[in-house]
Length: 436
Ligand code: W6P
Image (tube, rainbow, N blue to C red; front, side):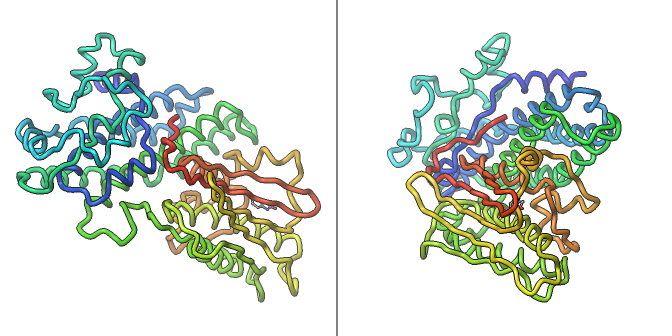
């Protein structure tokens, strides 16, 4: 009961989005002090996001909220919430030490601040604690509109230059310990997508229906989008705390992602999987047309996942249309265009297209297979006998990955001919995370 109250309390605070640019600027050559500040932000922000998800899981319609698998997922979120709010706050002494080493109002990063809120907000970083409880108590009823006032966007509370020198050893100890907790949480949530997918199956059996209605679809979109964000933030913190940083990487973000390299890798993998699955003598060719040396800032694993997913769909369509014994297939064409706003990747196949009436279903979380680990992009690396998934979770999840950094994914189909998929990736890395 007490826990339920805490969750309800945290769920009243608005979530705080972070942009790709902020993640990069924050994570460049971070000192232990900067990492501590990031930890403080996550220590505040993650419980809020988790609490929002618990509340949403609780309010699912049609007794979906009572499904065993939904309850299991909720339990994971509650457990992680609990771990985070029980994780010790940064002690006064350490906070003072970091503050001591902190150059306030740093010029180098100033341009980051003040884009979306009142710069005259008080600075709470020097408060007695980073505690939401204190803020909420001061705010009185803790309602959304009031609490949001108490949670300035992260750059104000957490964005400081921290001189790398002269920090007590407790700072790095705290960081290490917090990372341990994050790793545990991340691992705990690995099976969320497959578990919820199972819940959807149970739900459809219960209601004797083949479709899922709009509210549920909408819930899943938000839920998975939120999961992407949480895992991104956690992944960043874990990576940034690693001893050695890879060249051109800030956490899992690559500041010079060579698009053609990542796409070529996806092409090779998709063709291999396809040939393996259908036992083909010759797998359809995939042509890549890409401006030479095109680079941008992105998360290569996300990019690979999305393109790989599109290519699998195209390959499947082509092979199923022409049969697995065909001597040759019309090639799939990948065109990459560089604009000011977007980098767009078009994947065109001549696999017969999709009937217009089926276009909506492509984006629904309807079809699940027995090999559910494949539903989760993070299981792509596993050595499962990979099914060449049809309309599984691949497309809707890929669209969420695209949207997470301000992009999108669209399909245009000519029934009787083929399908074009447009993957738009925003080059304006200032987009804040979309938050459910
Ligand atoms: C199809 C169906 C589809 C979905 C996504 C991407 C490409 C394609 N091609 O026939």
